[in-house]
Image (cartoon, chains in turn red, yellow):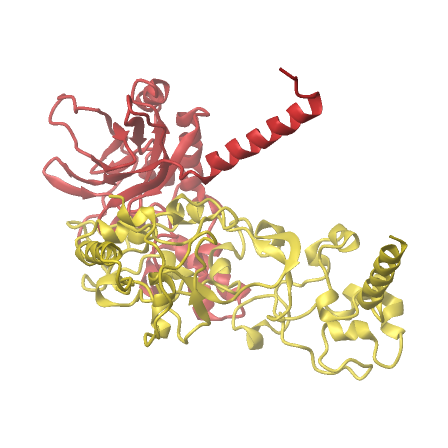
Length: 265
Length: 337
């Protein structure tokens, strides 16, 4: 048997590598999808979490135990406490509370609300000076004249908490619930499956708590993802201390920081 | 061999001649680049004033609405201003170049190439500008000490995608999106009678107005921090033609207008930046697994299968698509659950 010269071996090897790479690239990557429904019955009330983020982590609950432990032990500042700490006016805090808003970016600030909320009034006056007495611009751009701590501050603080809770873990994806179906869907999730193991385990969690009726909630649920079927996660709140299958739910009472109430007139 | 070398050299010389004949730095509007070494060394604010003096008339809101003044160019390009009767540097801003100070071109020149790409993290914005569900049993607003309440009937206007993406008022230029090159059509396109209306389309912002409503000052990137949103890139001409897989989708139809944008645009919520955005395209599962369109999409897929099995005319999918797309093979995504 004759031996191939070295340069020919290299050429053949190169061709094989290119062919293998081409074949790998031309195969459709295997992907799956997960749908999370964030409409939950809590203490007899229907909580609908709209425009809230969920995150997808590789592995089951056990694989993500360090994150879950941090979620249990880390103290979180509630929205009320954040703004109370800034000494925001009660009217400002109630404006946020009225529509469950986290920041003044949440909704349009109406003319009568400018008069009622001292922070809005001051920002509006500043805008009039800056924008050549144009009242429409002063109102529409009012948020740009509020202090940064009042506008994006709470979000930045929550991001800091989020990074701490995650502790450097790599997220596969994030998805947000919509305001109509209260569902979020993770699509194009890369899954590695075989004949022996047709599903791959992932954990879905909101990581930073959702606030509802004076309590904070973090759901972490493991879910099997396969390329064939849309996996579905429905959030539930356990009655008493009953464990929920495939989920760990951390419920904490929120610290009360406000001094009054925003009740009906 | 020598002959080919000669031809190559002649072509090279001709190319260089065409490229540089009669041109010097900043001689025409298209030639002005922010991306040169000399321009990159200076800050944006040393040339552009924010806002410019003409903002009220030009825009109605504070904005960079005009070219930088002569002083911005003069220190480096002094000699260019005095070269000939119609100095070509003037053509950068003036409609009729010359020493008489002719009218300026509209600012910015939309047909010109740009050397900036936009930095816009969708995910950060949607986390902050979040539509929140009205709390059923709470007063819309009653402020302590303020002592007033807002009309219960008046729905609050939540800031959401519509803050930047408005329904189109006039029919934009549109086309069908290109499919993968490897995809072979199963049939010839049929004559199309369908035409989308203007309201089918949502537009993207093409001015500072929506950005400045939050970022004019205080909240970074503010108006003077141009690099916070604009990053230098190779010059390109922005494609203003909207391309769609499903030209028949009407954003304003009764059953679509009452949905949240991210009910369907679910990929947007996982997009950090415009540059890494896979597309605002809607994964088929948002339509096919819904009670609204599951049966029609399923029916079209079956009809296509049957037409292939019968080896007759290929059924074209026209419920969502025009024939330009509907005559191609059904992708795997449409068949998956």
